[in-house]
Image (tube, rainbow over all chains, first blue to last red; front, side, top):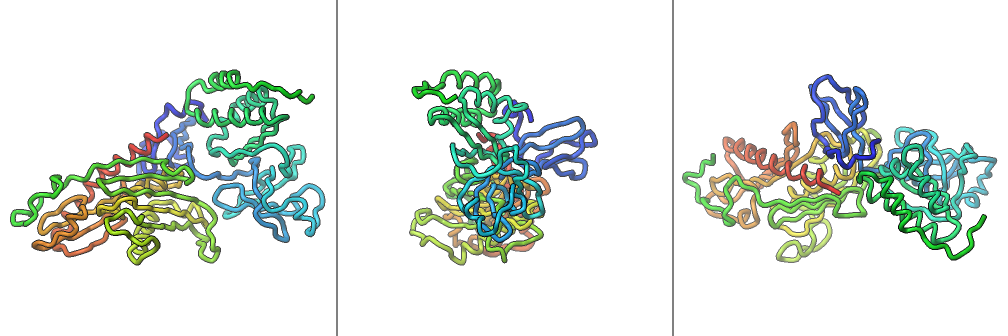
Length: 235
Length: 237
């Protein structure tokens, strides 16, 4: 994932992006005769001999291992039905919850409308299984803070290389920020001003995603917009 | 190019050349809440397409476990024509829903999305003939904008035969012509690269040996339309 995709040309479905045997068709490409064509609206990326398309739009496509934030939609006797975006419904089975949960207790743990932080376990053909087994990741119900939604294709840039961008915002705002791969981001601050500051910082990244030198611009934005804290900071 | 030596139709009401299409403006991302959207204006005919999906197909008994389904909702807004149109479905809108679904299903890679539905809403803001074609043009752009996997793009145009003259991109005034052989309306859609036909309808009469001429005129016009659709997508954001 390059930082400067804004300088690259966008390609449309059906467009020829390579001819001959120089490249092998990767994600979102089709081989037709001697040509490799794009099947998505996005940016061309070449990795050694592989040519693929990085989509810039479209619903979230779940992958095993992704951390996501979902909303409880329904309860069944085997678990919770959850909306994580994407084309298919997700399911959190009772047995993937940490500890032992009785069927009658289900609603008290997670009720309809609750937001939870969870992980994709398995992507099946027309459904997705979730898990909360890795307790150290802090999975569970989201009780405090706020959750904002961004285009899931922007998430890698918001996180940055090895978390550099999101760390920049965390340090400047003193907030805990958990980024779901499905585009939902959970922000927990000590006070409302810092929380809003973090939210706006993320919006700034998302709006300027195609700009060059985004890291420097982000640092400048964070410095210019730092809120004056009137309350005492918690330790 | 046209066998119009004896044709009664020698000049178009808006002064265009017979193979000239109306001025087009196109843009994507006009409906922020949709997963993809586009506006396509061809002369006075304006269509807005909004795409929602892919998402789980409800009701479950209509799901196709082998591939996704495209659901088109075409509607003309009541003020789009001179005499108010009652909102809601009509036999005409049901027909257009069906032919548009067929036209788009040929390019969308539905086998990649089993059990899902993609809702395509086409609203006609203003109508001066060629509405189903403008709708397909907008819908194709909106589907690409929404990140739906597609093999190629689709472009559509309404070709007409006015008495003996083949014309590209008919207007309402031309559709209503009655002199000589009258007006025949032939909406058609072509795929951008393979040039295969994905919509073909006939409203009127045309000699069999002239049909090829109409198709050629359509192919030529759709090439121009495709360039505009491509430009709008590439210049988005």
